[in-house]
Length: 214
Image (tube, rainbow, N blue to C red):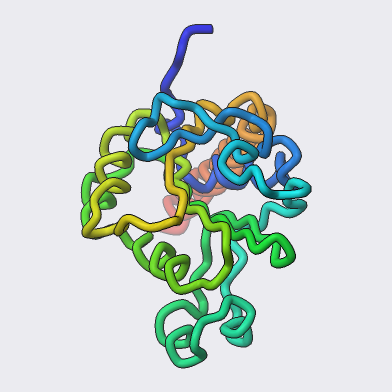
């Protein structure tokens, strides 16, 4: 199949909501070659390749789950440090399994991602959290339109932002997820278009009524 790149035409919220609807758990993701290591993005990997010691694949793919006030000890971080820097952070997606000491955070981007998003990225706070988290197996991944792969790669390999560590990092292209989220993207986008059409219809009625009252 010819490789295509067009997901930047969809806003991030449509793509993320579609993934959330399609994948309540990791069944569709864990053994699929969608991970592109930051250093060599063309070398596709599976989560099961990167975390081979897991006895079973994680069950939940959490969507916009915030870190909670009482979770400092859960992640092995000093309470004051956790409260000051990490309490309330809300990764776009997260996989975690305490018994298997695994935590993976994802930052999703869509639409026309501005260049400044890769300069002093806000996702540094997620990476700093993972550095301080005492769990054994950790990962951080961007989910992006393929169009921005080079900018994302340069960001992830910048030691000033993401210092070298045992944290696995990489990219996931929305294009590589289309076979999973195809129908959900269509449904979500159509609902948005219908809503906008209804809004335009009401706006036109409002304008007509306004002219009558003038």
